[in-house]
Length: 202
Image (cartoon, rainbow, N blue to C red; front, side):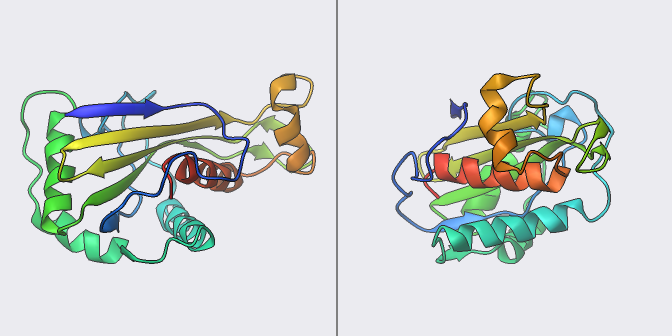
């Protein structure tokens, strides 16, 4: 298994790399609550799922963003789900290897050249309002683009806890773009989906 990690913040709306050539399949968001479910990395806290309805919302944002980016011809999450239900998650005894074999198997089952796997690993809603917060929203999302034929993947991670304008001048433009307001976790996730799809050429 070969992994390429993409990090950093995109400042351009132009895709960072060419669009993958071949048949693309897109899995729906999953929310691993244990480290053995992850394709890479570790959870800050195990056994803490996101609130009900979160994944459905993120799936809608993902579909809308792909449409906005003019990515139309792909195998949908509902079709991929059929293979997720068929492929057996087998414990290999090695961290991350079980998840890798599972998702690679899903990609082969659906007969895709590339499989996009989004995983929500952290979700905290803001405590307060757009005008002020006791605790800001925070999200962490991993996108894995699996090359099914070459058996390798690219990981692109988005992680943000919103910060006040004066707390971090490096994020001042982002705070201003959001109207100088404290935003919801869904808005953070939406920004992350936009940014990371661009990094992956989608």
